[in-house]
Image (cartoon, rainbow, N blue to C red):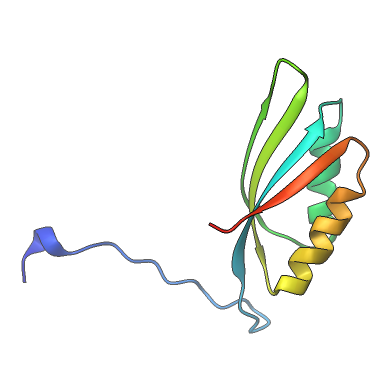
Amino acid sequence: MERGRLIDAEWQEETSDGEEKYLAEIVIYAHNRYGLLADISKALTERNIDIISMNTRTSKQNIATMATTFEVSSREELNKIIDKIRAIDSIIDIERNPG
């Protein structure tokens, strides 16, 4: 077997409760304000969501764009999280990124 043809692979570990997790990606648009990131992080933490990554930038028009990746166990859980974030003050819109 040629060493140059091998690729690294990672296997998703099963959670301690045996529930399978899936990566979800959303993009959040909001009017930037003090504490916005903390409010979004709190909404995810309250639902025991593991944030994998978050990339945030703010435009000259003071609109924050936050690309967020986290783990969920179902589409229903993802929809509940989106609803919870949508209820936060200053949120304009949320888009799901199909990945």
